[in-house]
Image 1 (cartoon, rainbow, N blue to C red):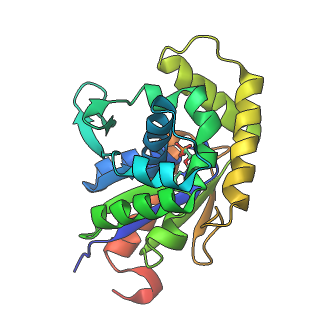
Image 2 (image 1 turned 90 degrees about the vertical axis):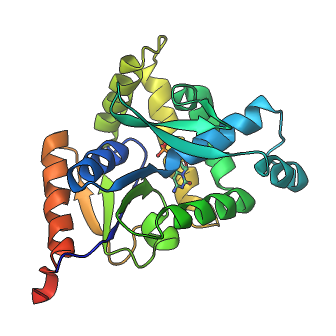
Image 3 (image 1 turned 90 degrees about the horizontal axis):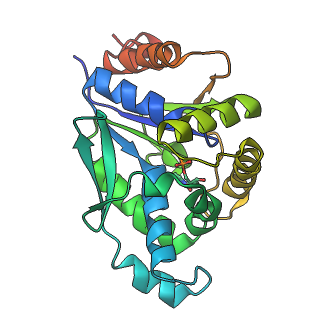
Length: 234
Ligand code: DC
């Protein structure tokens, strides 16, 4: 009997986690949740409202006014991120947000708030969630955990292409490289749920794979869990 599962995809910035997670979810008819977009939306709210990240009271008061949801966009065939009912999908991808998001997502109160929402979103399973702490904290019992990596230069090029597609101008590859290195460092060294590979996660190095190839690999892994053919549990 096929079973409903949770698929957690974690890893460094710009390894193709969200693209893979989205396409995998489409193939499985599961819900895709980009948790990085949620941290980006909180960061946007804090910047727009002049909230000082270092002041606990400002952060906790601010969080009460942050409402995030996703809506499927028929044109782009992707979910758009909404902050307080306004679509912020393009805004949250800017370098300004990328430069502050690791600091904001290291704040324990922010993480508690986001993790609680993510756990609700996955309570009925059938989700593919990508982020940094999904397999370690949000869903430590996820049936399939993937830890994605890729060569730094390949990641820089992928981010450049992504920003070009979103029609950003003034794209500076060296600035992007610095930002990825900075975020990898902060994300892996914060005290609250840092980015680490869960013991039972499968590592996938996407450096030499095309998107369809990496989606096919994870699809096979997912089908094995869904059909219960792992460890001969037919
Ligand atoms: O996936 P992304 O690059 O859009 O994520 C943006 C930032 O959000 C990332 O640098 C760290 C943070 N993040 C996190 O701390 N935990 C998650 N589950 C997802 C993202």
